[in-house]
Image (cartoon, rainbow, N blue to C red; front, top):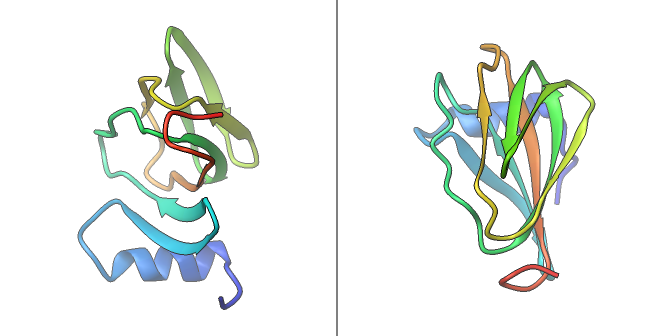
Length: 105
């Protein structure tokens, strides 16, 4: 694995049409970069995940909770829980870490 920076992660992402790209994996862990444009269309995932907000700000819906977020924050989502980013700035991007077994820990 080469060094991961937000700059090279976003460069890798810009080379495709999807809003996410897997950058590294080891064991059960996957590291992705995620940068939706305008609307976050993701669905619940089968594994636990952690977001580390790299750039931007907005609101995060996690189940029945909606909270403001900004760069530098860490957000957790349990497997199977509906979640999404809303009203986020154009520069919003986040690291995504999936880990553990299907169904969550």
